[in-house]
Image (tube, rainbow, N blue to C red; front, side, top):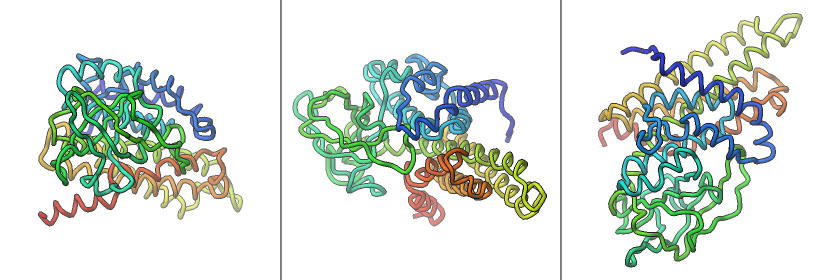
Length: 379
């Protein structure tokens, strides 16, 4: 049980930190305010290998580990949590294609996805099926060499802007075994999008409904076999949960550091507020809980790399704890800024708006508790 990082891990962690400081942080407020999707910045991140962290090298991936990815996403989220989170989704989708698609499909999609010449989106949630994902109703009916898709996906990051939509669709009977996974390319007739959602946070990435009306998709775009879709979707989410947990760590760490800096400068009653014991104890708790969350995330990442039998439960625990802790630490940091924390000029309120959704997506934290409880009780 070695908690130290290798020289290589420190190197790409530092590279991610430098990219966040130089390319994300200076623009994050403007992207949030103006709702800019920074495609060229994402492609610059891809040039450093951050769009395909655990995709195989033969298609341009970095072939690193889930722990490596957690280190990268924590650093990127310090610069812009919203943009880092979008990058994490793109990584998840690319890994799903890399791991489950036939070789011809891998080589057709992944070289462009690893460079972000093309951008990927993950389409599972529907208006009527959120936490109950296995009840999804988007239907794909085989018609010769194509599937004909009808239905709608909701809350899709990249909706209307992505080039490849990896979709969970129903090809069989009700339940998880009737679900398949297929890639739908932008421009396919019958594919359309809803209006861009107005959101509390995550404003540097577009979010929209994805709709299918007699949308004919080549059967060759199937990822895995018919009936494999739910298994593929859940496998993707194990890693996605760790990634989003790491993004929460980064946002919380950035806000903790801002709070400590502010407390050293702000004086009340003739004394810097950093000298007030009650506030020092609050910061001590914030730092302790954040470090505990970081250890859980790293442990879950290692278990996923190892294919441990309890990898799904470990990912659920890490996601639940780290995203709850992350939001709490950011909220405490805002409170320690007093009225200034409520102002956009100080940046903490943007982090707060961005991390709030981490407790909802990639499986709500209530669903994480359900996964954990089933493991504890054996049912």
